[in-house]
Length: 126
Image (cartoon, rainbow, N blue to C red):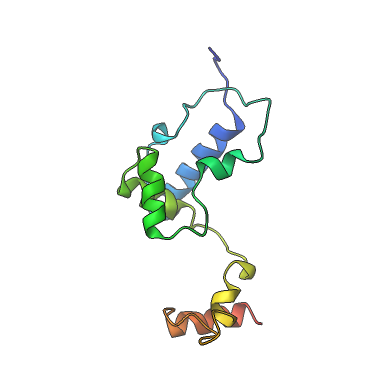
């Protein structure tokens, strides 16, 4: 229906796939996505759509597994797609509570590797 048409979403999907392969040997088939490539971009952007279709960044492993299973994806595909999102940089604000304000008993998350936490604290001072 749309010859020679590639949407912005397609470009992002292909770039993520190719980047993951280049930096870590991770390869996955973009045909497993929820919509086929080659479509035209939509004319409407719905604010709630990502939260309805993408897992929350705060999901634990069980919630992630359930979310991917509901989309027809396997655990291997979940790990591959999640791993591709680990390429890059996270902002200190995303995890500083784990370093300094975990709970009333433990300022730092006790499950964190102490050396890793120390290195993070150097990069993300209070």
